[in-house]
Each structure stands twice: as structure tokens, then as C-alpha cells.
Amino acid sequence: MSERRAGTRGPLSAGVRSARYLTVALFTGVATLPMPMLLLGATATVAAAGLGLILLPTALLGLRRWADLARRRVGAYLGEAVPSRYREPGGRFWQTLTDPATWRDIGWMFAHIAVGIPFGAIGLIALAGPVVTVAQAALWWVLPADEPLTLLGMPVTGWGTALGAGAAQLVLCVALLLWATPALARVHARMSRALLRASAAERLAERVDALTESRADALEAHAAELRRIERDLHDGAQAQLVALAMRLGVAERTMAEDPQTARRLLREAQSGAEEAMAELRDVVRTIYPPILADRGLDGAASALAARCPVPVQIAVGPLGAVPAAVEATAYFVIAEALTNVAKHARARRARVGVRRDGPSLLVELTDDGIGGVDESRGSGIAGIRRRVAALDGTTRITSPPGGPTTLEVTLPCES
Image (cartoon, rainbow, N blue to C red; front, top):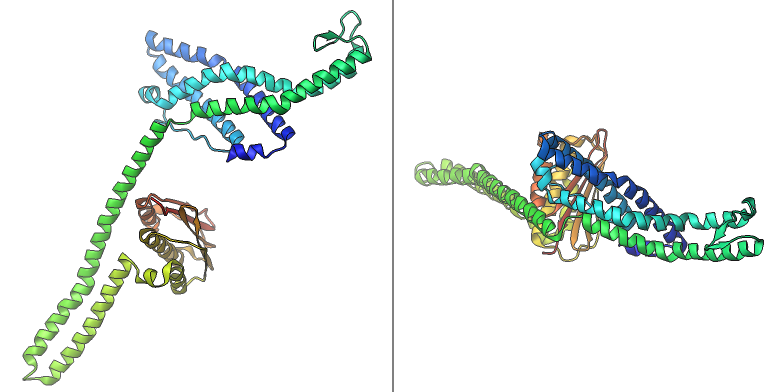
């Protein structure tokens, strides 16, 4: 997307931008020149003395920071982030030395010196060349006659030579700026991106680790959900059914001798049966809310908003086909978030937005409350994160002290 966007710039704008990028590459390449010697010296001290066990990780961490600056610069030029993927953020010797990202940084260092300096020199010439050429052609007469100005290898001894050679050199510099520098900048930026970002195998390994962690969270959340359902059934519907059976048994034994007591017990049994049915319906709603099947996510979100004591604005865009598990998770996210707003936010109003963004379902809730959400204090956000992570989704919350609070959840809708 970035390179397509860069391609929509005008030729002059793209050329100047690329020339600036290459000029910075020239200076950073020159600044990188001492680094190989510093790393070599630190490595030599490892063999000679234990001091190198401190100096080498320090030098490598310095290279990391330098490479991170390059990642940001390359990402800004290409319009896409080039994330750093270091295993060990600290300075311990073995972890730093065996991190594949460390060796990518070293490879980039040598490549940047070899490519960045010559390409950067061309970028500097293209950037400064037109201005310098015009100044030279206009001020050729300032130089002494025995040491004349030279343009394109020709000594300038008169205005004819100054204007002709100056125009030719200006055309050359402009051509360099318009066509050569964008190509060279793309080559350098793509080379740096390829060297500084993780390989496909490393990204796959990280993905497997993330999925393993989310799977463990999903299993833990599933086990907790089963325990909650069992507790709700035991403490609610099961207790009601046991009391119902006891009342029916007593009513049966007293029917002949005390019809009045038997009728009272039957009425209580009927009331108990209704309460048990209500308890069962509540448990079923926590497994998969029937309102989702009846009215869809739009209607279910509106029902949650209607029950919330804080005024809630609902905005649901066209959603298309949404898997049942994703729909249920979105429903529980909205329910938990609105519960938090009602209990903790001290908000006057809230807004819930649900929309489809390509293969993902986006849920956003904002309130104008006091902010300062602390996940460690049982705010329900941890539970939301577990539910969302179980579907390989992402959760982001912004809640500065004083508000507002914004919860953003992204749920993938395609496998």
C-alpha cells in the first residue's frame, strides 16, 4: 500500500523525497562506518579478557538502537511498519548473541555501509545539483581566468559555455532527481526492510507461539465457563428442583389428611417450577443468548443498551454473515463492557459501534466516564481479553485518568 501511495506523488515530489531519504542514508552510512571496528574490538576482548562479556552485549545493544532508527526511517519511506523482533530485550551475553535479530542487524550494518554510502552520494548530488549548477553558471566569472570553472568537464570561459554546459548539467541533475533517485531509494529501502524484519520462518514460529498461548487461554476460559455453569445450575436450578421434589412428596403424603396444606404445597411447587425455569433460561443465555438467534447481533446489542442504566447509542453497520462463535463473543464483550460502564465509569453516556471490516468484525465501546481502567482490579477486561484471544482476536483499551475510555475489539470472521 505504501509504495502504491508513494507512486501517486508527482515526479518532482517523489524525486525530492527519495533524494532526501538517500542523503540521510549517506550520513547514517558514514556514521555506521566505525561500528564494525567497535564490534570487532569488543569481540577480541571476549577472547582476551572477561571485559568483553560486558562490552560486546553493550555494543550489540547500541547496534539494535541504530537499527531501530533505520526501521522507523525505512517504514516511513515505504509506508509500512518494520517491527523489531528481539527475543531478549536485556543485555545478557548469550541471549543477545544467539538472537537471530542480532545477526540480521549485523548483516544490515555491512549492507548499509556498502549500499547506503554510494546511493546516498547520488541522492545528495541529485538534491543539491540543480541549485549548485545554477549558482555555478551564474557566478563563473568570479573565479580567476587561469583557474576557470569546469562544467561537465569543460572549462567555462564565457557566457556561451556557462549557459550551454550549465543547461546540460542541470538537465542531467534533474533527470537524476526525477528518475534515478526513486529507483535507488526503493532498492535501498527494500534491502533494509528484507534484512531488518524477521524471516518468514521466524514469523511463523512467533505465530505458533501466539496461537499456543491463545489456545491455553481458551482452554482455561472454557474450563472456567464450565465451572461457572455447574455452579449456577447447582446453586440455582438444581436447588429449586430439589425443593420442588420435596414439596411434591410432602403434598402427596398429606393429600388425604390435609388437603389445604397439600394445595398450598402444590402452589409453592408451581412457583418453584417457574423459578427453576427462569434459572435455566438465565444459564442458557450465558451459553448462547437466544436473542442472537431471534434478532441477530444488532437487536441483541440494542437490547443490552436498553437494559443499561447509562444512555447508550448503538451504531451497527452491515455485518453480512458472522460465525455464531464470533457473534456470541461480540455479544458478551458488549454486555461486559456496558456492565463496567454502569458499575465503575460514572459515565453520562456511552456509544457502541459494531461494523464489518473485510474479514474482521470490529466492536468499539466509548464512554465519557472517569477513565483510569485498571485490569488488575477485576474490571472484567481480563475476561474480555480471554474470550477474544480464544478466537485469535485482539483487544485494545485506552483509558487515561479523567477519561474517556475506549475499548476496541477485533474478531476474525474467516478461518
